[in-house]
Every structure is written in C-alpha cells, then in structure tokens.
Image: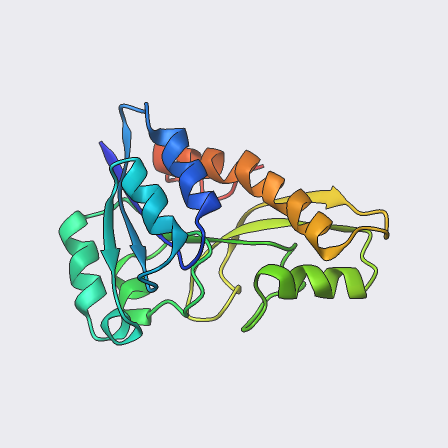
Length: 194
C-alpha cells in the first residue's frame, strides 16, 4: 500500500478532491492531512472522510516535531495542496523527490514568495496574459523553483475577473492533480508527465 500525506493551510478543495480520488483505491492511502491552522477547513474535510489530522505550529514545523510525525507515517509521497509556509529543508532532505506542490500559474511566471491564490490571478489579469494554468513541481529549498513535473494551460480572453480566472485554474487542479499523484506513486521512476 502506497501512502501519501497532504499539507494544506486553507479550505482544502484540492485535498478533498485527492482524498475522494483515492477513497476506493486499494493500493494508495491518504494517511494524514497536516495543517498549520487549527481552524482550516481542510481539517473538517479530512475528518469527514476518516483521514487522520495533525495540527502544528510554525515552530513545530521547523523544530523537528513535524518531521518526526511524518517519519512515523512513512509516506511514499508528500503533497502540498495550498500549504502557505516555506517547507523546511530538514524534511526536504529526508524525502528527496518525494515532495510535490501545485502552483496556480505556469511557472516560472508568477511564482515566488507571496505569490499564491488571488495574488497570482490578479497578476495574471493585470498583465493581460492570454493564458494561465497550473504547475505541479517538486519542492526544493526555494519557493516554486523545484523541477517541473506537469503543466496544463487554459486560454484567457482578457475579460475574466480574478474570480473567473481562479475558477478556470481550480478546474485544472481538480482534473489533473490526483492523476499526477497517482502516476508518481505507481511509476516513481518516471519523474515528468506529459
């Protein structure tokens, strides 16, 4: 049985989509959802599906406590799905090429510290981009700079609001993120996906 853990900070629509995707899968288990916010909606979603929940502080993320909790679970893959804190190098070093993140833009555009959620969609709109999309990438010590695993774009006509751009991007996330995770767990030697 392959095991994955999800780190999330917010409402958890991607986390819920991933949990639902693997709910009937006999070879992949979502072992836990971890969050740095005790009131995050993702925790309610995890509870609804019977997935273990772990809440931690920023201090615990960086002092080895979270690493110890992850090591007890022994995941095959760590998934960041709307996790807003910089991931510690101690965990990255222990799980090389086993930590992935989804970013709501076509990296390297609109990445880096502070570029998440509506900040990204506003920048895309303000720059009159003709397309946007998602990037799934490995996590390294720098925000949004790890090797790219998968990208998918969606056309923009220039009239969309930030909310409409967000909805288009979220649809791509829901369509592709679980499939990419499944591919990485089933074929871990194939590090990029067409």
